[in-house]
Length: 286
Picture 1 (cartoon, rainbow, N blue to C red):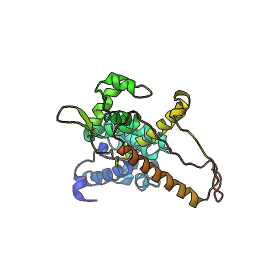
Picture 2 (cartoon, rainbow, N blue to C red):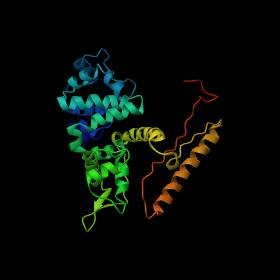
Picture 3 (cartoon, helix red, strand yellow):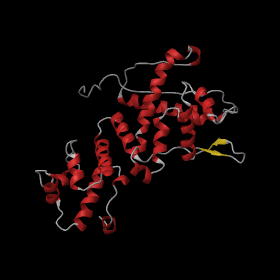
Picture 4 (cartoon, helix red, strand yellow):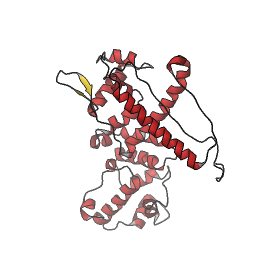
């Protein structure tokens, strides 16, 4: 731990991992609060184990929901910091992608986080709201109208004008669309990268939403305008990996073909899923 990092009190909103935050806080308090130690923290927080904080930092113990407020109190966090810490612990300890995505949404709602990471809310929204990508693709159409009402009715299924307006705002914020010399919106070649773990968790929600749209299309879209099929096949692990690679290559071919199309007339969503419907022969059933 470098001295300059612990001279200034760590800001909780800058962290995506509560264990790293606790480690930095420990070194900060150790340097600036003379009697501070693992034992001192346990006594202040009311934990029987003198090394509980050390075990948590090392990943050997988790923090229960009941214990989170005791950490906040012992670290003297403000109300806003305590709320963020509570959701950050849940985010890091989430057992499913869906739970992680829900926790991420709560973290992004924090004013402290938004102040430090102004783009993360827009990055999260890009995938968390399924219609952001179709709205961006509509801008390439020759008959595109920068009118929230037109956009809301062109997207299928329809969205609200308010949703369309917010989508345009966030797409501009992310630099995915810009205004040309004539003041008209146009696409850029930029893509959304989400190295931030909080923002990246929205991708889970995007995939689930789009799979739901695919199921709905069976009833809402005529058969000649959709293609939904499935195959259930017995394979080895080697063959499963080969099929996965084939799907990835096919997706790249589709993107290349679509990129060459100079006269788009509609937007299609293409979902490809490969997942097991039985346990592996050499594994115990879960």
